[in-house]
Length: 491
Image (cartoon, rainbow, N blue to C red; front, side):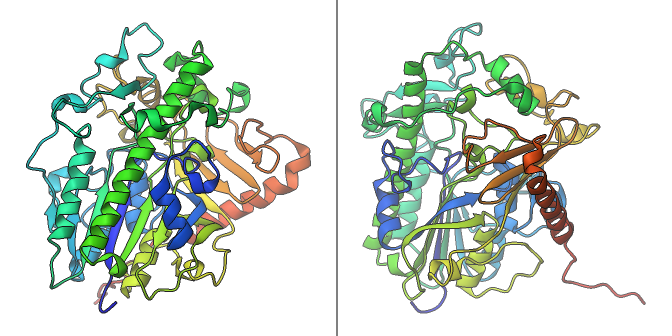
């Protein structure tokens, strides 16, 4: 490889880490990810996002800042013009940046010119009915038990279509076309933030029928709600899924797995395009999701904004470096955070960031020089009482009972304990969550990997609790602010 490597950022939405075959899930159909992890990439089993919903997570992994640094805790507070964004950094350093897919990162009113050379718009637009959020006839009776389930099931392709041509297919095909016509005089960066497998849970054949329902792992059952965050109990009551049979849950979960299988197939098409164009060896490929999904665990669907169960915060994260960069392909058990993504890109490209951030390059882990990276990982969300600007009142349709997200957003817009500010400190063995206005959480992950037994008041774990509180204090002291690189004249 001569010069800077090409960068591909393949970024599906709401993919939980455990739905991958090479991590031991027999029901997952992810042959392209599995093959890559076995031959050319490192897959991180213990990768964690810094917020369990879209916008705050993206603001974090594109800047290297935790959400608290500038208050990115809602869907309506995006990266401002004075804040660092990796895409802009790459563009300013000579990359041809192509962005195809959703935003949830920068203010739409400001446009995208500062962050990319091409904000892709397909010539062939998807049919309106492929937007399952808008075409919600699949929801059924508002008083029924499917109205808030997000379950749409098998999707039907148009007679003249090979696939269910929606926004994701449009963006993937656009990225492949860009690869075939890549610029010859500069390196390229492809940012592909897809919508799948974000619910509604719906997928076309062959992926709908490709999942063996009998191989699905067991769901995490509904816990003792008295010891869990009140937001979860509120959503549980409002979603009205308590009467679902295990067969119905199995179909919902299999559909989600089918959505992941479709994304894996699309990822494989992109890798094939890189190989056909002769660009594969010179390309660094990053595959990761912004956060996870309940998918039936705890009797819940979708996600929350201020709880940090592993199904929400533990995400897929694979890195294939360009040829010439040392890599020991494997599944790594290192604890890593998504804010390590921009630091790794900077190390590959040879960039010195123009701002303080908290990511750490993963190149030594890729090379097999070590398999320890962090002693703890962190995620945070929620709000304080009085922070009406963080209630997401802009979600007017979502905050009414007709809205698909009403079980969650309606609670966020109340001044109760449900949407309290909270932060997670997770080590290999324990998880501590500090919460305002209600009880903290403490889980022994060795004995209770499903996080159903909150042992915050257990004297047996008093020493563990004290050490995690001390670690959380250190985390906040280390990351509480960022001093600008540019100094001002005093005289």
